[in-house]
Length: 152
Image (cartoon, rainbow, N blue to C red; front, side, top):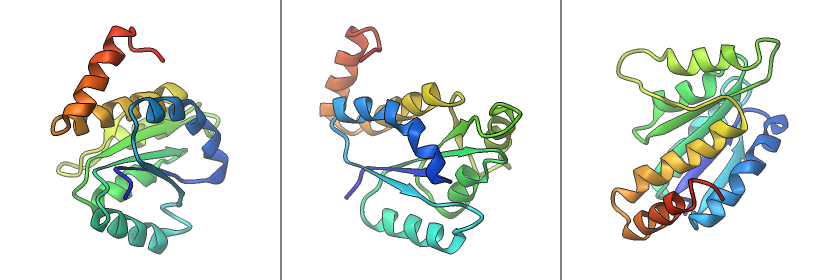
């Protein structure tokens, strides 16, 4: 069981996740990373999300560039919280992805983070804050993180 599922739309996006691994390890989170495109692998994405729900995933982090449909598509098919991370994958330097993520229709929310590596790290920390609402161990870890000046 992975408590956090991290999904990127392309294998070329995996590099940006490296910066988040230190945080995932510090908070001792069980996570899963998948490369699934909202456009090119839609059926596989839907199947994965349904399986993740059944297997106990509690939060989904979706990283995407350009039109960045991945977070919104995921939010439309699950009740789990979705955190969107826009990536710099076009000549617009990630602004197109950011706007796509924050402009979701009423009733289908996606939390939006900063563009790129800072956004991925913040997505992990935000996921921890969600999970810590019902997990005393994560609450203690968050307090330690705060004492470290929010840095690892």
